[in-house]
Each structure stands twice: as structure tokens, then as C-alpha cells.
Amino acid sequence: MNMQVDICKVKLKNPVIAASGTFGFGREYAEYYDVSVLGGISTKGLTYYGKPGNTGLRIYETSSGIMNSIGLQNPSVPTFVQTELPYMQTLGTEIIANVGGSKIEDYLLSIDMLEKTAIKIIELNISCPNVKEGGMAFGIKCDSAYEIVKQVRQHTNKILMVKLSPNAEDIKAMAATCVEAGADCLSLVNTFNALAIDIHKRRAVFDNVTAGLSGACIKPIALRMVRDVCKTVNVPVIGMGGIMDANDAIEFIMAGATAVQVGTANFLDLTVMPKIIQGIANFMRQEKINDLSEIRGII
Image (cartoon, rainbow, N blue to C red; front, side):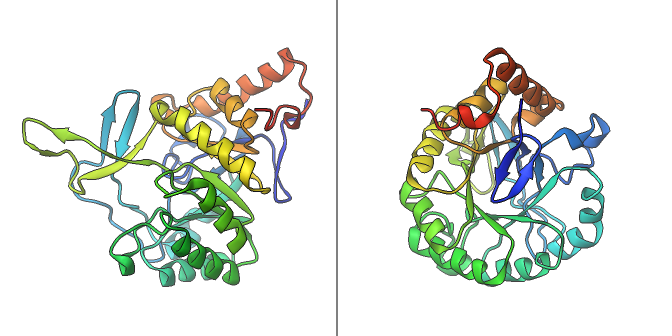
């Protein structure tokens, strides 16, 4: 029974990856289980200069999900390279560097520094607000996405994974545009833009008014988008969005995903990812599936 997956010639021991922003740099979860069992870890979203994050409330529970307004709080790419990366390289799993920024120049500074490391995969977060364009995310319109992916592609020889926003005007066109601009693979979906209101204070719950929605509530939409993208482009797709157990992960693989990322579920059960990995193995055994390629994209 083979649970290995191949992302642009990088082999993961299994298809389960910790999603960016939900696993930190692995230190906290390593106190609860051996994280080397994971297929990979996508780092906390990194920016070149680092960020203190948003003011006010940052996490808010909703029906079957959570909203977050973290604001890309992170220690900076240089600090990550100096202090966090050496630790992560001892964890025995593939490391994916998630990179964001508020203007293209910031992305390129980060990419140039990460290019000198042993990291094999960079996950480009294009859901970040483009300050030069009035705050609209790079990943909403195809032309701005094309420009940033193309420029980043020219600065790196590493595998370039572009993380797509479900808030894009057309997710299939966005996927095709990013591949045309040089993406080796894609990951989706990032959080949905959402709103919560405190009726007693008569104001939005978050200082930024809107925030990102994730968790079980978004899974059916995320699953549909992953299938749409898998039918549109011929590159590996990493699916995410509301994966809470092994059945959810298998659904994404059947929709065409090469691998999956698990995020919000980690907050509900600290050991959920090893359970998902075991659950996939049990399913393969019961269904007499020798390789995940037998069920990938069958929908």
C-alpha cells in the first residue's frame, strides 16, 4: 500500500500537510506527537520585514467554523531563516515556505533570501492586499496575479506553489493564469472573506471589519473549487478547506487533489493529522487500494 505522493518530483511520505498559519513552525505540536509522520508542514505566513499582526479580536467562532483576522503576524523572513528553519529541518518532514507581502518588492526580497536555503517548495500567498492598488488582494484579478507570479518565477528555481483565494473573480481562470505565469503547482482554497457583527456593541466584531472564514462550513464549496481547478490545469493541486477527518481528505483526493492541507481542524484536535493519515491508510486497506492514484480525480 503506497501513500506516497509526488509534488513536482518532491516525494512526500503521505498526502497530509499542515496548513499555513495553523501549525506555527511545528514547535508546539511537536510536544504532542512526532510530527515526522506528516507529509509536510507549510510555515506560518512569512513577510520579509515581519508583522505584529492586526489589532483587536483575532479569532471568532462561527457555526461549524472560525473567522480569523491575524494580519500575517510573523517574525520576518530573515528571523525565520536564522532561528526557525534550523529547528524545522530536524522535524523529519518536508518544509514548505509560505510567503506573503503587501507589494511585489517585498515578495521578491523574501524569495531571494529563501532561494539560498534548502527549502524545496515555496507557497506563494497571493491573498495578501496589494497596497499599491488600494488594498485589493493580488489574487482577485488575473492580471495582478499574473504579474506577481511571473516576477517571482524569475527569482527562484524552487518549486513554486501558488495558493489561490476563493474570492477570485473566476477561480478556474485564476488557476490557468498562474500556471501560464510560471506556477509549478497550486494550492486552494484560502479563507473566504466574511463578516461578523456584535449586535450589542453595534459594530463589526473585527477591527478590520471583514475576516477570513475557515473550517467545516466551507468544505463543500472548497471541494467544488478544487475539482474545477483540477479539471482546468495539468499541474499538481493541493486541496484544502474544511478538512476535519480522513473522509474529507479522501473526498479532496477523489476530486483530483494530489495532496491536502489541514488547518482549522488542528485547533479542535491537536492530534487530528496523525488520525487522518491513519484513517486514509485504513480506507485504502479496506477498499483494497494499493496507490492513491487509483482514486485520484475519479469524480
